[in-house]
Length: 196
Image 1 (tube, helix red, strand yellow):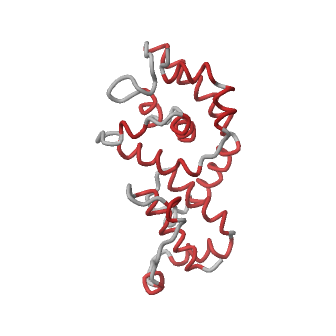
Image 2 (cartoon, rainbow, N blue to C red; image 1 turned 90 degrees about the vertical axis):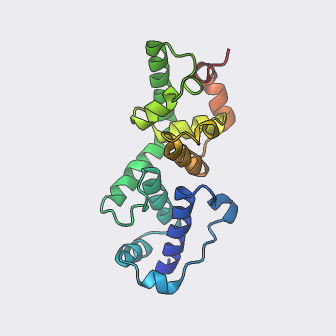
Image 3 (cartoon, rainbow, N blue to C red; image 1 turned 180 degrees about the vertical axis):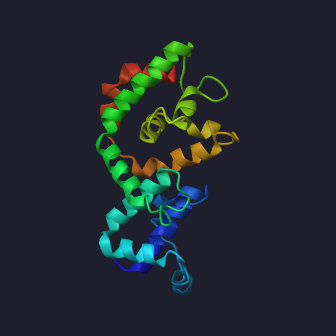
């Protein structure tokens, strides 16, 4: 892959993860970047290395992994970006196992704290406190959001707005069979959402 194309992918994903108005799924990554600007970048070596060593799909995954990890620059300036990517790949392979474990952790905290809904109860619901405290995986919260959207209700909250943006922007990259998850974890999900 040509380095300039990696740069354009980077720009599209950076816009997607850092701005409310840009959605890569609607624009299909169409971003115009100037070659002159690209050639002036300080991270040109990193971009060229990505282009040389990885396929397009891997580059997208590396950038997504780093943006999802909270790196506003997608790991381009970070020497640990490949470690973040490897951890992300492991999490992706263990996503359903982690989901089940996280649901159990949420239910335990709900019982311990006397909470009826981890998602809708309180100013800053338990689900957000747990994700911000890194007690559960981001993928779990995204899966819960995809099953029954709730994040938009909290996106204007000053404390939660960055977390809500990350969850919303990461949604297209977390894929699973909704029907299977709904049927397999129905009882736990009913308890977590607080459905009677």
